[in-house]
Image (cartoon, rainbow, N blue to C red; front, top):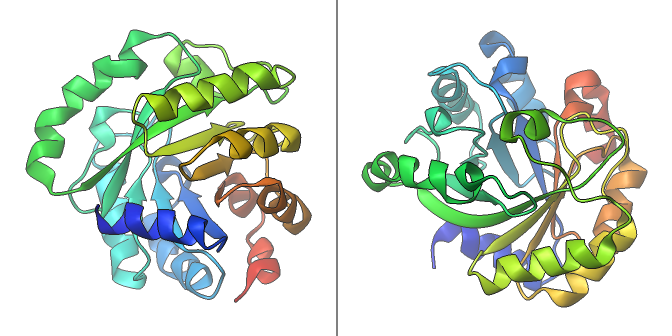
Length: 241
């Protein structure tokens, strides 16, 4: 078992809540990353995710290299495309969009990524990615040409997550999408967590400490926050160590 996944799984088993700060290379300026990383280092964050739905080639690597100068937290790729893979990161969430039925995002892009990954030395973490309706169209929906699972269809969300586990995914990621109007249904988080034996990640639409705590209390092992910090870095004051 590799280090990053081992630590995520171990923390989940011990009920130690984890937080990943998601950085979209298209939405940050390299010159500002040093100060941003300092705020991350003083927070309860345990991981940094880097990626976005549409990112210019080489931008991901530039962001990763700059972050590595300023933090010792694991930097993990959260790629929207093969072009976002860089061996400068510590690991990669190898995302299968199991809520959709576009073969490119179930297996096609993965096959394309293998030569890069095989040479990279990155820790590859198979992750079942489930997009859930949040009240607006997301960039993931547009790029992947798939539809999210309706938020009220909790049984389908549960079965999709469990199917991902049965298929061998090591993580399940419930995602409302970047800039979501509302976070993943907390009842859905709770019910999915009851069925899983692998760690559960939840992201999208979490903009307050209260929403963060609700996600944790509902069963999220690792919460991902991105837009909240893009819009208001003062949120870091609420999650200091």
